[in-house]
Image (cartoon, rainbow, N blue to C red; front, side, top):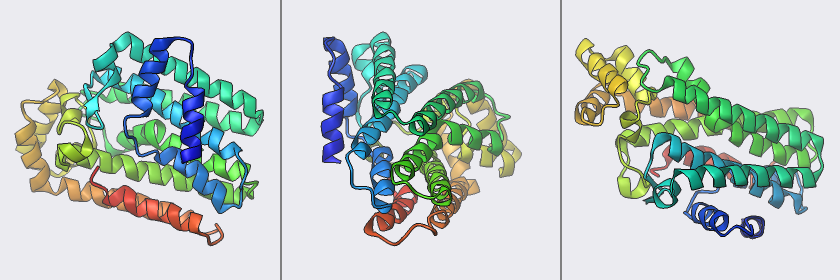
Length: 309
């Protein structure tokens, strides 16, 4: 990871001072670096010991960071990881344009690697992530979103980059197609579990740990799984309360919505769904040979579900 950070610092260089300033601010803001770690761990599990993994891990982090910059502008967020968002500090225009810089820098780095399969995986993933962003936008303030539509957004917007990261390790590790497929499935299920817990923490986390305001998703009218569960299994009054909050972006209704979520067991249901995804991720690694790298990949399944931040 230190080698990846060194690549990130080098590749962030731009003659334009504001590009450097905004990009460094968001990159250094304390992210978990899970996605680049997946590249390193999956490659390591297959015996790869070269340096290409560091470039690929940095590319993954640049794509992820670009999505964060754009996300925060779309969501009008002012807090991420306990710090002001880049758009709150530098403005929307700078955030969008520096996000574009990070996307284009990632594609420059892909071309230098000069592997068509790698370029296809990353370009497809980037396109699907963008589709996921638009799907989420379409779902906002729509109280008729069901679990299937909700999960589609997660698989496009969040899980796809986890999937691509794990698959890249398999590609440079020259794995069999079966192992590559298993690592791809692992990344997809891990990313889904990770986002499910993110959505749980929006109604149960400690703000100091999560680095975001509780109820942000509700204020933005996002119909996440805890809300969908209440609308499906809660009393008519509870369901009506949640529907109104989604339609109106219900910051003011947050206490009543939170009470409904707790009364119906919606958070526990969502955690169980995340656990099921994590177990699917574990099962997808069965064909991978034993190693400390595989152990770490398995441990990430536990972390994704048990974390509080």
